[in-house]
Image (tube, rainbow, N blue to C red):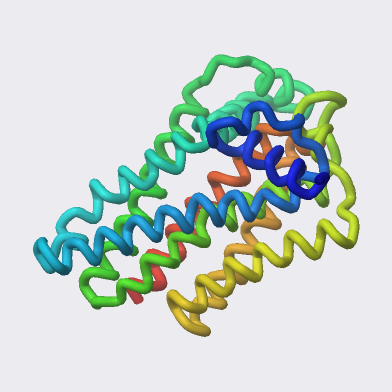
Length: 267
């Protein structure tokens, strides 16, 4: 079935799921499945953290999550990067090198084609990782401090909103050049694709409502706005969207949403 093929293509592009590398090359049909892939990644993460919280409550220290928030956040960040082959960090590094290393869109695209990572790219990745760890650690510590373990489910929506950024970039952008990932997945969405993408965002909204109630709706709205804005702001400096732009949008949106969640649970 085409639907299952599109879903598997999205997993093949965005994850290291065993066997997914044999899927058909991604195209516009796989795009509305991007948030679903993120929801799977985030949902599994939150489920493991909730299970760990249950185990700690039974056999461990009541303050475990508060004391171990930073190392746990490092492990979550590492897991999210590893499951995606660090694809999005690679895109962020290339985009940072291009934006600050080139004066024209053409020159920036040339820099993005260079496989080497420069000082701008390395710095950008370091700051993004620090931001991700800080955001996740704050959510974990606040959950332990206030006894709101349901807040752990907030993290399930982070990868989903990140992949929504790639979906929006593919839907509403134009290719910066022929060929490449950007040109393969970018297309004006059909009604069915829009409905599917909205469905996965609604699922993320349901998770956030469960985790934080109606107040979490503001977080979701902010996350969607960030997901919409990031790829198009970057693309405006490059003359269009590329695969690196989509990847950068994912990780920048993830980090931004993580930090917003951290501020919200600390309010």
